[in-house]
Image: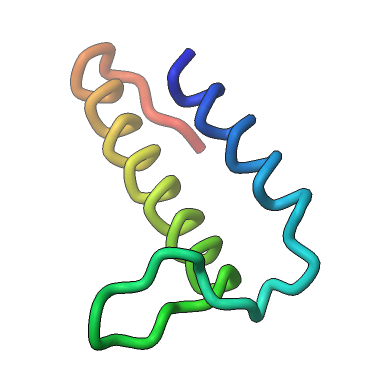
Length: 67
């Protein structure tokens, strides 16, 4: 449920974003802010990585493998 809520919140934010090249609103002091496009790419990578981890754990539990 928390994941779905986070996705809904992110979708609302992205719906208001006219340019993926815009910098993120929160930057680290002394560093340029990454773009919205960079953040989206990073989140896609992280989601895939964690989904892969969950799949490995499931395979260890039930012994079945995906294709």
